[in-house]
Length: 231
Image 1: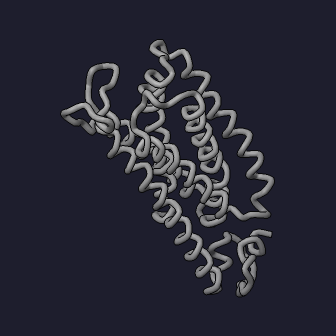
Image 2: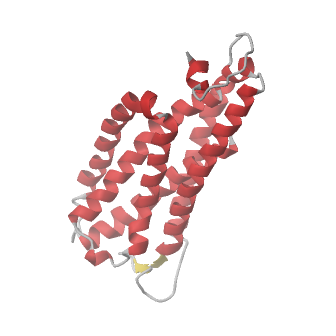
Image 3: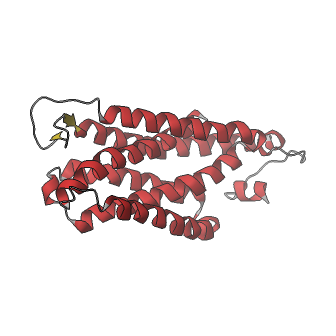
């Protein structure tokens, strides 16, 4: 379970970074949206992209594998923050750049809401209730921690990474950006490690316990061990 924690935290941190910094400050400055008139539209872009991509990933999951889709999701969370670390001057951003970030968040969200939960059902089929409860817990903790950090990473002198918010307070956004990117990278490693452990569990003959069935234990020797186990 702990190996899957980084992906949940990557989603929570990316979502709180988007909500606390991008929606609050980037949109206001880059799009000259002092009345927050565009926030609803941009947020709907994320939701629409997430819905569409969930259907798309659901159709191709059996062809490319859930691991590939989760890698794409983690990469999207990484790219939600990375552009602001590389191009920190908010006034240089425009509609294309800002919309791209909301689209990336939508793609990442679709992998979290769909593929990740499907993989949890595979990995923890013998204890699905506990697994899904942990998803909710980890999402809540990461989101709360992310929003807490968004207002508690102060700095003293305005600079390209020390941003003055609309309320006059200064915030170190670079630390938050590094946190989002780091958890996204750890998410890839964590999923890989969880998949390896899952494979070893099956190869040890623990099929009945892992899959939550009373099937006769038997080894899996080919690369499609997971698909065979779930049919």
